[in-house]
Amino acid sequence: MPKFMFAYHGGGVPETPEEGEKVMAAWMSWMQELGEAIVDPGNPVGLSSTLTKSGLSEGGGANPLSGYTIVQADTLDAAAEMGKGCPILDGGNGSIEIAEIHEM
Image 1 (cartoon, rainbow, N blue to C red):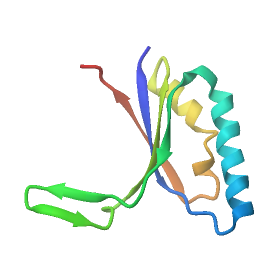
Image 2 (cartoon, helix red, strand yellow):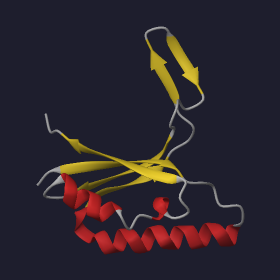
Image 3 (cartoon, one colour):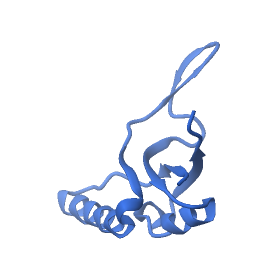
């Protein structure tokens, strides 16, 4: 079955421990709904840097990555359906880039 990477962009850092617990509960609930479709639950990531031939630049680029998850699904459309319940989409400032992983 094909695997897809969910690359998260946006979202935010909880301002209080209580808000952090609420956000974590939402993520855990969504991941439980996906069940065995999750290959790697992933993690949030720190601010990225961009490496080009001319060197390393900080700042995360135009649309910085904020985390990832790897799922398995029959099709891109099926993976997109799974992503619709993701908490990163709540609040309107987050998005998910979905890409099929090609096994080498």
